[in-house]
Length: 542
Image (cartoon, rainbow, N blue to C red; front, side, top):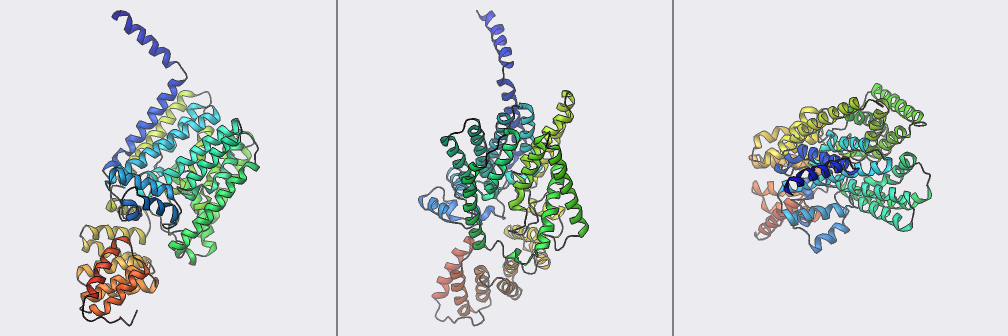
């Protein structure tokens, strides 16, 4: 019996290998293993001081874990730029399970990215019936270096989470298209809503689903997009409120429309270029003061040529038109025509849009290499390995504040943002002498950067230069009259130079205006100390 058992088991294994499920198992295991190989290193990485801090460790609503008050806050706040309750809840759950051990928060992002990569494979396989092309598209999605920012940055949980719900919505939409029913359509809307509650980038869903109708579903259905458009409109309105409250568009208010349009056109080309040859990737790309006319003209000609070629070729090969338009439409909300934030572009903005380019590229390559399976297989392997190695290298730059911002300064032009955050990181570890030149450079590049002025003043005060600190705090107030942290800095400086009475009014004003979480506790303690002193006069200059 024992002698016959092994041959029988081997026979059953061989038979199983010939079943339809075997390639799927191989693809799934390969996707998971390759993605883990690239991103497992983040388990030792830290929070960074750009968004991570305000999203998790310095946010009392989040860092305490899942609480009743926290859940209410998550659904009622539109602070931090977006209405994103599901993103907040995911961070709260991480804090509930792992505390403030940053490595586990990073790994949650990695697991969501793996789930998204598998969903890309399963959704495209279901839509097209082409498992190996779907696997290649999923592999590109999983391993491309432009994915690193969304995965390795805890503050970009909203990217990977919103994409997860987008792909769930797409899966539900494909099932609905196969057999339409009200019940199946409600699942589509529910998943879309969950995605919008993670990040409003999903306002493009109605248009992206129209492109999916064109290819690969080959159907026409306009009326069913109306409820999706309603959800997108509501999300856009709520986002506009959040952006206004956070002052996200104040910096961009002075950018002429011509420059915004020029930057958008050039940025589209830069995204394509970094997709093909992903070099000089950084956490922040500074906004240009001007753009040469030849660059804008070249971008217009190139984009127009690609669009015309994709539409012409799309008559026979629909995936070329659908994939290219998916990229254009998917990027539109973040391309900068309505500028939000200080960046000229960002790797994270391409997380969903590049799915279209990957699909067009893979199906187009299959057309070129038809009948040459061995060549196609080798080419696919070389591309995936090259992108995987490049992603592994890029992920290493996200180890901590120092590495990520030193890398940004090394590969981009003058950046006030990277200098400011690198200075803050150096100051936080006690290296004030190394931090001061970066703060000075930040305000030189961008004199109106009030947060950098505040950080510069704080470093000077710690260094023992109250006069220099006062000058920087006053500059911060000049550019941002309602900046509570700067008023607190002035109050602290007045205490340092022996004028505690004048500091009282400044500290009270700082608390009224609102402070960053890390300063609020210290301000209350300073106010209690000053209030107990016998004499206090209001500082006349403020």
